[in-house]
Length: 130
Picture 1 (tube, rainbow, N blue to C red):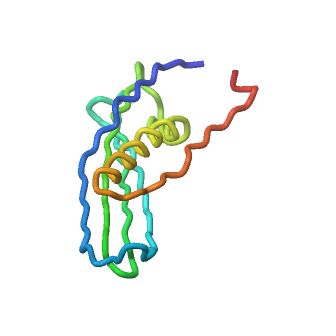
Picture 2: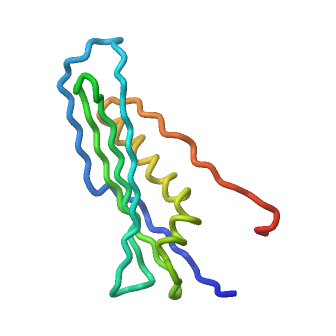
């Protein structure tokens, strides 16, 4: 069985966009649409490294009053070559990365005065994994 040390670097904000027409009245509910996309970009010149990109978008699709877009980048490296590193990251390390991304979303939304609640990250445990 092959072992490799996986290092997940700090998640950084790559881009942040916020638009608000300030046309909403206080107390008016906004129906927000939320989209999240995740991609793992492998580095062919350094096959033991990858970048995890997460794009988070939320907008008021009905009234077009506000929109927020946040892109994050998280570096991941392994100590030795791993086949299908992108799949390994998605299957085993995505929840840990999303915890950091959720914190960036929470901080950025608070700065612009939004109260965006991110869903909790779920981990699975089985006794066979010990």
